[in-house]
Length: 249
Image (cartoon, rainbow, N blue to C red; front, side, top):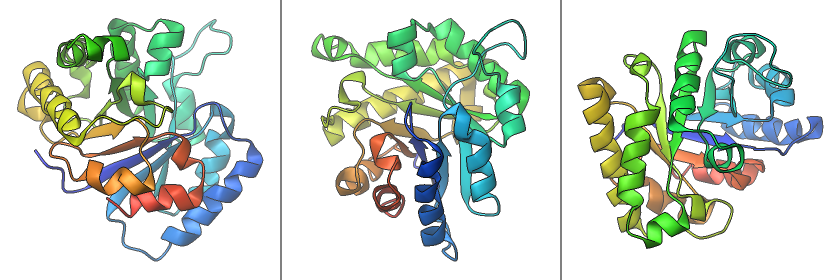
């Protein structure tokens, strides 16, 4: 299913200080007065969520978190709950990003619990899935991603604002990008797994592509069937680059 309105979400990862809000102000100025052709979000570090939410208030730009705990509160030093993100002005949160899965050992079960926590707090989860280079080369990309979708999506997202993001691990920050045919193959597999897991209630949820999305390849990627937007990394840190991707939607 092709989405009529795409979601372009920027993930700043562990980048950005207060001075980086100047880029957000520049992006807002460029977008103010324009009819938004897509939904736009930025996910900064937790230290900037509230300040960014204030900076974009009244604009088309939404703010999201990059991760959350499954618990609402408790003795989890350094943890950030979905409720805290909501309180700071976020409307979205990324869960299950490959860097969380690879570096912190997050399982599908934990990702599902975090997505459920996001819904509990009134946030729209962006649930990430994707294969490693080893899995891709072994011909297991579709199998791996299908398993992640079936086990990372809680029933709680039905009827809620949510998205799935396909991000091949080997393409993140490397400059490498799958072929358009490979992207389409996996996105169709993701949609099939979503329908298997959640039924027709998931048919309208967008499937984002993430992995070295840039202004010069965005239009081609966003035209692929079942690509309902993009999860953008480094290119979202600069207003001009992110704007180029937004305008390709």
